[in-house]
Structure formats: C-alpha cells, structure tokens
Length: 464
Image (cartoon, rainbow, N blue to C red; front, side):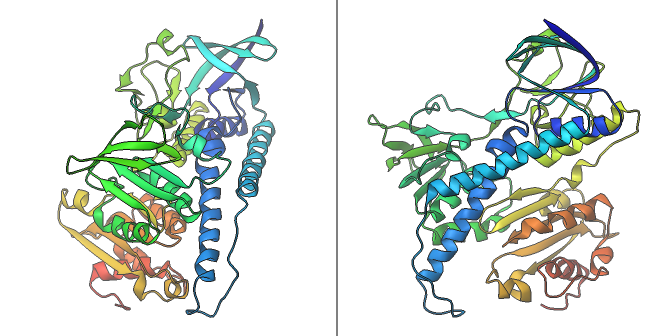
C-alpha cells in the first residue's frame, strides 16, 4: 500500500475539479487530484463538448440539405448532401481526445499529481484509491469534493437496450430513423434538434405544460417555431409510461388522457441529473445535505472544517462554468486569499436552434422586487442578423425603474450564446442602462441589439 500526503486533495477531475487543481498548483499548493475516468469529467467527455460538436455537424448538414432543396434566395445551389455518421462521430471523438490531452498537460504544467482510480473516504482527511498498481492512500490538509452528476433514470424506463441517456446518444453508431425524447429540458431539445437535422423523426414528450420551463414563454416561442419547421413533434402535458412489449415504441399518456404509442428505435431519457454522492464513502464524514446535494455556504465550505464541495454535487444551477468559477475561488481561498463570487452573473445557455441565453433576473422575477424598465429589440431590425437570415429572436434588458441598474438580460436568436459574456459582465460590474447604451457596439453586429434594447428601455431606441 502506497501513501502520499498533500496540502490539497481534489476528488473529481471535471470542469470544477481540474480548474481548482490547476489554480491551486499555480499558487504553489501541493495538490493531488483523483479521477476514475478521463480528465474533463462529464462535460468534456460525454456532455458539453461532444454534444456541441454533434450540434454543429447537424447544423452544417441541415444547412446543406436546405440549400439543395431551394432554388431561390441568395443564389446558392448545391447537390443533395450525404452523411457519413461514423466520420462525424470520429471527428467528435478527436476533439474530445485533444481536450483530454490538453487538460492532462495543464495539470502537469501546474505540478498537480494525477491519480487515476476511484476514491473512497476513510475520514475527512483521508481517501483510499484503487489504482491499476494497487491501493493508494492519500492524506490531505484540505479536501475538495467535485464528484459531479449523472443522468436521472426512470424506474419504468431503466437505461439499457433501446432506452439511452445523453451519454449513449452521443456514441450512437448511426442516426436513428425514429427517436423519442422523454424530457423537454435543454439537454433533450439540444440533442433532439440535432438528430432531427441529421434526418431522424423526433418526438419530444414533456410532462409539464411546455418545454424549456426554465425559460419564459417569450424566449421559447422562436424555438417552438423552429421545432415545427424541422418536423419535431412536441407532446406537452404528456406522461411516458414505459416501453411496448416488443421494445420498439414508447407508451405515452397524452394530455387528454388517451394512450399513444410512439414508434422509436431509441428512447432518449433526459429528465434531469442527480448528484453523484454514492460510492465515495461520504457516510464516513457525515456532511450536512440539502436534499440530495451537499450543503455549502457562499464560499463552498461544507459543514466539516477543511472540506469544500463544488459543481453539480452542490446543486443548481448544474453548469460547467459555475463549477469552474467555484473551483478557482476555492483554490484561492485555500491559498489564503479573500474571495467571493456573484451568483447572479451566471449565464444559462440553451444550444437549441435558435439559441437562448439568460443571465440574472427574468422580467417576472424583477417585477416581484419593484418597478422595472424593460427594453426589447428584435433581430428583425438588426442588419447583421438579416444578412445571416437569422431574424427570429430578440435581446431583452430588464432594469430597475428608479436607478436603471440592470437586473437581467435575455436573448434568443442565431448564435446568441456568444453574447453571454457581455451580458454576464454587465451584471458583474453593476452596470446601468446608460452604461450599455453609451458603449459603442461595432456595426454591423448582432451585439448592436444589446445596445438598442437598453436604449429602448430608456425610451429612445434608434432603429425601431
């Protein structure tokens, strides 16, 4: 049995864990990180990165198919495209592999010791790791738990066979002819749209009255329009009940109480994610919990001194960039720096078609706190959006009525995910409507819609 000691032990090398370890290493802290799989966690290996690669490939294929079928518009004509899906998957896997190597290289550069294996807590300062070369015991002064999350499994639709999670969906060998998606949240719709563009007949089953319930109806409306154009059938207020006897269809109870059978090669279950808190021996350290999640304070400290927790294991929003921000902050706190962060400035992005971005308070949330000013500028009045044939959507700015402090920003439209940094920076710096309106936005860009929305809230938009 090997034993090593360190100043900081990070359990989990997902976005939060590896960022925490790298920053700690940069600050001269003797750091060890333990990971059972490949560096990068769910996001890099079977989540954010591979899904965006698939979404991009689907978008390019759909675009080529679109132009092959048209004889008008901007003068482009192409032959009918074909898809070699195995090559697409290989390209996606190549990106993941490069990023895996990149993370491993960054950890090495920061002089972080990487231990591959499953960590099990013995107490609050000690873990044992079963590695390929035997058991290794690691003792640390401070521990960071970054064990992430996993897809939620439905008891009547257990994973296996035709029932898949997002992980298996991103590793399919061929595009399914018919795909049923259970769950109309961002993961289900992102992948559903991608497979629809690749040629699958997609049906989305959502138990709530509408899809993407975390966003307001105004933001979701352009997405619903596009789903219809892509031939995606959306059943809201519907409940999945299980597989047919032959396993070739999903059984559903529709909103009007009728039974419906949806033919499907695969049933993709995307009803949420759960924190990975089992199998790590966490019962040995008896941390306070917030439901299924580890309870933390504003600096990610748990109920036990010297133990921090970051990322999905600590609750919503379960976003990679939240975990990264927490990881960086915790490393600096361990190094003796004073750090905090503003949760209000975390952007949420949905990579549907069109994309959705939201940061800060929604209009209804802001109105509950007092009088507001709201400015909306449509992309149909934005020159750059028109040149990209992306007129559907808008930018919306929500601010206090009295001092014009910006409380929230939302947008829906083609490529609006790239505006998320500007939106977050606005909230992080405590900007007012006048600050946005007074910033010169390059012309012609979609970002001009941001400035125009602020001008609209002030009562004098220029281009509408």
